[in-house]
Image (cartoon, rainbow, N blue to C red; front, top):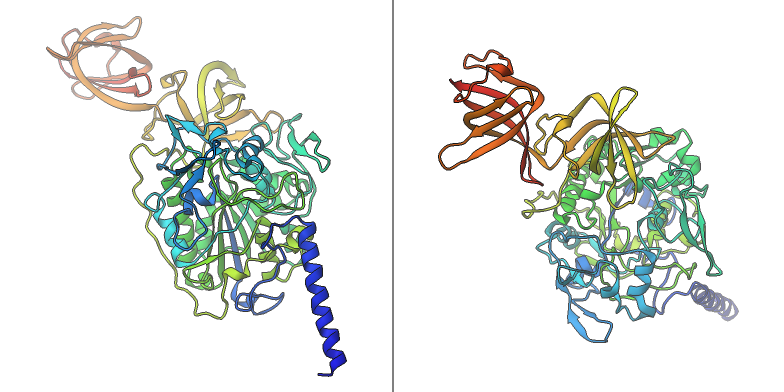
Amino acid sequence: MGRSLLLVVVSVLVLGCVAIAAQAGSWGIAAGDTLSGQADAAGSCPQQSACHQKITHVVFIVRENRSFDSMFGRFPGANGATTFTAPDGSVHPLAHQPDHIPLDVGHRPIDARIAYDGGKLDGFSKIMNARQDGVDFADSQLYQSEIPNYWRYAQRFTLDDAFFSTIMGPSFPNHLFTIGINGEHVDANPHGPSWGCDSPKGSTVEQILPDGSISQTFPCWNFTTLTDLLDRQSVSWKYYAPVLGQYGYIWSTLDAVKHVRFGPEWKSHVVNYTSFALAARAGKLPAVSWLVSPPNISDHPPHSICAGENWAVKQINAVMSNAQSWKHTAIILTWDDFGGFYDHVSPPRGPDQNLEYGFRVPTIVISPYARPGNVDHTTYTFGSMLRFAEATFGLPSIGAQDGRANDMMASFDFSQKPLAPLTLSPRTCPAGSKTSADGMLPSTFSKMVGTTAGRPTMKAVFPDTPLVGRLVVDPKGKILNARSSAIHLSDLTPGDALYTRGYPERARPTRFHIRLIKDINVLTRTVTGVVARADAAHKRLTLARGPSGGQLALAMAPDVVIAGPEGRRQPLSALHTGARVRLSTTYNTRIHRYVAVHRISVLSR
């Protein structure tokens, strides 16, 4: 090489480095961090390269509300912490977090700012619901024993310990960045039962504009998403999430994208999360999948993280069960925001410096080509997930934010011998774990309020919101107790916790048409005794339960069935004092009271 040519090459390299450094500085990146989209040689994957031949399925599994230190602060080789700094500057061990905690810890924008405290990261104990039952749960962490299968994934594949949520705030704005680059400056969750174009008229979500002013907007926009890029290149995709009317529909994030929500792909590409495992086992997953779940199995406090981990394991097992698909799959398992839990790493400054970036969240790369037993210290954000898919399928970037993000290729080695599947077993969760009816809408029964078009209608309160709804019950629908045995509407008591399945009215999203009700406070119990008194007029029965059992006064259901010793039905007037009977009753475990008698079997006269 001639001297003059060598000088030209060196000059270009120097100018290139200066340009990259200047670019990083303009984005406010902390020293040592980069969002340049470059990876080392072993993991690099230029567009249209051999990477696309090896990875043909990308799966984004988005879980809920955990910081990196709260799950992997004790992980060997990771940049973790086991102590925290209190507001007075003192240092203490992080508390041992149990499987589930009483209340959700605050993670609103104000909570995040209080915890951040100008970069001192000492305000976690001051956020909403940080202290519960005398324990500072905001400054706590799970041990390996609480999340053994998540740890096994991290030990076998690659754990990313510098993956930052995009927004310093809660779920909704961060979920937006898992599908695209939203420039609406949203920092909070919307108010109401739906988070997107389905929101009731007048619903708003908070924005912090570049000048620092706060505004409100309806949560429905037309911004470019990764799905648009995939469509243009005819690359298949699906978004697996709770559907309209299911618990967790708020996390079906494409509902906030107008051209998707009101376009033909809403029915064909945004599908029920329950169909993911079936498609995975059959080898019918699209090229790109997103997967979110209802809160009770999402790792979202106060729900059991064991229940959430078990559900995630079943989904990942389904992917690994199809050997041909597994050979070409990359799963990015991540969590959407910090959930109010401590993390000791100060986030880098992002392009929207009022909002970006948020605290670190756990992220595990699971693939035959993930670096085995590796901790990747490269700086990533949700834009990096998008960039990975773009690089894998030869797509352009949506904009500057994903275009400049590290593409996650440093977590891979496409030259290695492919890793075998790691099939794990769901485990038995601790007693008292907060599990619930999968995929159903929770509410608290208030009272019956009459009928709607001839259908029984009840008032109910939705948890975590100030909203009161109407549940219109299908006469042919099922009404079940906690053990899925049939009961009657009359067995419901005000204050009972319900899980329901149905769909909301389009014009009135807080009115639901219900085809299944499960009252988790009600059980069916059998009681045996001697009739002390039978009041046929008022349908009351007093039962003597033996010398030490006392008497039990019970109401009879309107459709009570009385069967004689031969099994034949008898009228209520046929009940006689002194008859020995066996009663099938409903019992409310919340108020410790028998609600009604549904069947009386006469054993002897």
